[in-house]
Image (cartoon, rainbow, N blue to C red):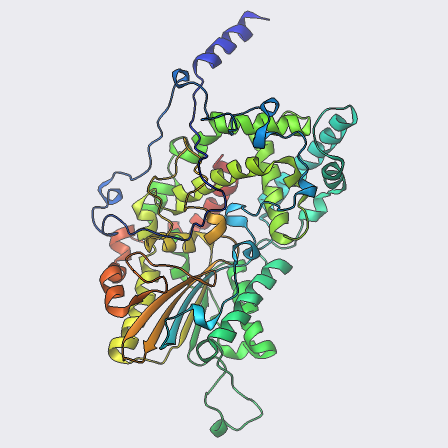
Length: 538
């Protein structure tokens, strides 16, 4: 060995760091509970003072021992056995395939039960107004991502087949067949951002079920074969408002939703010609862009996570499983392919998912969740405060109905992107863990599991109801299931007075003061931001 190689190895040995893993909770624990914010969302903003609420990453030395607590840990090698071992595991024969694929999880995995009228409001209360925020359905991939997979995966597939041909690797015959039969053409789902067949099915299902339960609010027909005097409305959809973010997938979702409700006459409803900027507020908030998105990736925990022991162990196990030396770029590319094809056809095994064991996928899910937590969640207060326009929108609509008897709009439905829906859920105080997500711990019992609340087609419905005792009631539905709001004692929601007391801050929204002046330069951020998310965050 040359002295230069020896010097390099000595240097690497002195710079090893370690992480801690906690695996003391059941993976299937329910995560749709919430806790109130400890401070008012628009008070004590460290970001506005030039600071940051980012979780700081602490570096541990080797003096703390192994990077895991216990033998069966994400740092264990295959020869230690246990649930982390690759040998003997066959993805194709998995009786319960993994469903947690972070924000690329198909809606069917998050939907635990079908919506019913009895699960919305307490007895004696009748829904009178609906506010519905829906993330677009599953879509085709970005061309940058497709180009990466088209260039990297075919050579990798040949290497895997060759390795197994000479007796290396641990894939079972069925898993190896999946990878052998895979072709790049399977990843080509057409124009960037357009809904896939599964994405359309997701949106159609939501529209159909909400039409059944909230027919008087969501579906407003007009019978063309009747005279105007015989019709209760002047046009289809009168009394409803539908808008979409300026993106292909959001527009496609809105059209699919209306087609499901009105068939070929959906065009008479009056869908706006262009997307609404208020549903893409994250591209207009300069303080958010400068303090969060443009922050050096070296200061972001999801980037430092890939350099830690937990991810190193994943690379070792996947390398052993495939018989090919893995890099973080290769793992990322395979994981993306696994996610995409699982989202497009969740009932068919996704070939590149066979590269991972369920526990490897669990670590990769945490990696994704950590990224979303930092860029879209609780790590920086400016991130969720910028969503206050959506909060003010639904709060003022409900207040006008209760206090001013303004009943011209029965339902409001918005179709938006992940970057708009997650900060709004955060603004409401949902899925707020006691211990913030960080790069040191993979908490299997965390509330912040985006696969359960931010996958394709995920949606939040706020419902205002009128009760027999002349009171008012506010309920929330997440993915068609009642969710307990922070500060509310009843799992079905709050009386109006209690709701106003808890969420009055939603109306205190000054977007310009919070985010800074809008400039023409900011209109271009959506393009470099897409490039950043796909290429630069590793």
